[in-house]
Image (cartoon, rainbow, N blue to C red; front, side, top):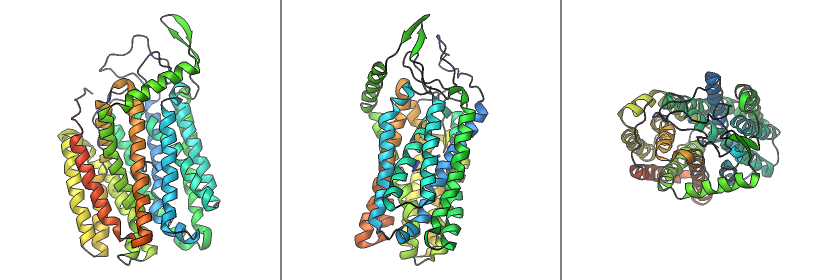
Length: 451
């Protein structure tokens, strides 16, 4: 679940980040062509072939991730009833997703030294297609849980490298806002597809929903393969340096990757941004994943209708990422994000303390609007305070830390709900919002960049 789930799509400052900035490191180029020996000036961004097509493909890949993640809240009640499992076993689904993101983090510093960006994005698309094909079959619960690992691994490859690629283009804050808005659109659409299928088809018919993300995954694979065709390849073992051809061994590439990981782990700012995302994705995925069960059991809503409630929040997220991107960039990312977090705190407090179904739904939806810009804004700030040569690895690790929050806290709700009920949802989400604000307050101000 991307964060994608985690999901993971937001206001953007302009980011001058190179997907692979060093000449000798064997990493892929952002445009499928070798790096120039002299390099571009610091403020001059390289020309990217088929840029618009690649950006649209990037946005669609985030839409696919959102359509996957957005279905979880609507489908949890049917998963519980049809697999005849308790809420504690839902934790297994979130945990396997987290393992997928961890594996991606471990391999993300190594894989770009062997595969160019097009190949990495295609690998991510193939993994997502495979997982959706397995789910549509409605496999045994054990294999169903494994599909969440496969999906997360595929999303992690696409999300991290897409974020890094998009942040290299001119007006990056707008394009990052676009791709993360597309994730929000996927979140919005999913409940409107999942709920009618699950509520109207008896027995295991709910699993037919996965034919929808399966079809999207096919389009995703075809589109990314076509638009990134110029970089759909492995990195050659030989490269030209100062007019001489030199060989790069796998051992040398691995040493370089481990050195990069060590440097990233020592970055204080990486841990600060990572903790912010840890609590942010924890709050988003916990509330989105359990709100239907909460409103049915605590607010006594009708399951067939309440299944659409996550769409309200996801619609807010989609609009927030489009509408708030520019003002957040214009008036200061740190200041505006703190304001949004304070507003979300008040909205969540009302959601918890006012025992009214309609009020809860409205507060939940508005909160999605103000949480919308958080992800892209965090990536924007992180991209400018991380050292340039380790930005891809640092962002990849940040996404993994985020997914840890997205796995731990929804799982925690499931374990606690087994004993005391799902009414623990609002105070836990409220605490996560407070933790978001505290960690964001310690993130240093990003230096300004010239567009």
